[in-house]
Length: 199
Image (cartoon, rainbow, N blue to C red; front, top):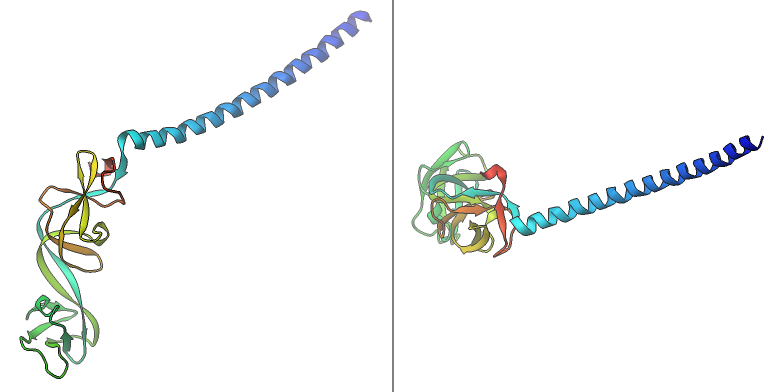
């Protein structure tokens, strides 16, 4: 009987040790998971700090491209200001038709220049405007500046935007063939790295 009591006493002690050990193991695992999560977040920040912010880019290439200039047409006529008249010429495509003529003299009744079209529906249309230069997304240009990638750094560069539409800007000065234009949001002098999809 005493022997059985001793075994039961040790058995209770064994259960206590097992439960305490299990609780210790669960606490240890939770602590390790939290530490691992903190380490991963820290490593991501450290990676950006050490290697730079990953960026999206495009390579500048002087080429011929098409912009779209809005023009409101009514009965195959449109009126434009002196600042825009130079964008249009006879033969340019507009909608399903084309521009027939662009006046060189100002209309004294309207104070504007008259553009005559053929086979163009009334309303807002877009004239195809072909030019040569560097075409970059409009969002990459901020106050006549673009960011370019130079030796792991984002460098602000002044450019001349000759024209732009809703999608692209035509740059005629400030870029050279092979320049890497940054499309991501960055600041001047920021450490950056090329996104793997760019390489």
